[in-house]
Length: 345
Image: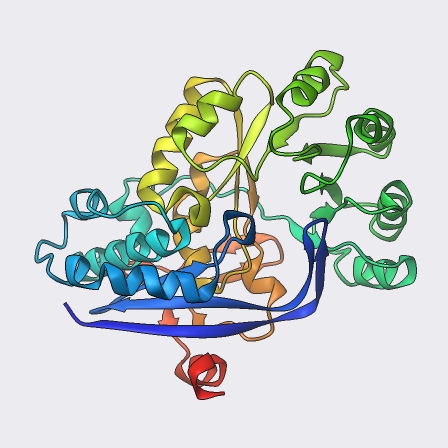
């Protein structure tokens, strides 16, 4: 099996500021296995970096490339550890893309999910100063769903600014574990009055008692867990504390792990969101194949970057338009990829 790694720099259209920090670029790693492509986006709160992703992939290079059965994806993934979930996701995606191309079918056909309706995606607004936030909100006011990053000192005012700038958009908020219990108890009822339809990760990832208190308070706004949800076991562990979970392929280790987590969430009666990190159309196209299985979608990665590395996936405002081409359905934009390659800098 042919093998190539491409460390790349994705450039954000606007400074992406959340409770964890701010960035203008992200470093991802692309993996090419024969004709199959995968993407790894480093998850900082997992302690991952692009360098660690590359080291993990190189450590397993012989194991991965010696597999001759393109359909033995779960078998091969079983030989890999979870030290880097993002790297494992890149392998999972590349193998699925390779198999789909060899069979001549899109990934959603391969997974038996063709024909399912895809929810519209939200578009994310970062933490920002008031006037800059208002301008950004006006620029995306035509999108039907906006996801607002919170966890700063002016959270309620920020949502009020966005509500005024985009009166017809549905609002969801994500505090990225940035609130105390007291702040959450104050903000959640006020956000409900502003029409916010769900809240992601309001408290710290280990504050189980705090989430139990929010659940018991029943503020009327669904609470979703994001950062601590990596595996199906995590879904089960959090099922009594939240109303829903946000799954991302970079956390689940790819499609196989995501399918297990989705099944577990449904078995526990949880609502489901499918999200992404800052990713190109390569990683997001894989997530789109699963999007018909969930209630809410936050797959705006390609909309947030200025240098997408592939074509094939498109958006009609917030409506996802998957490619009908085999596998992930993407075609590499080689000029864009070569310009983004970190080893050429």
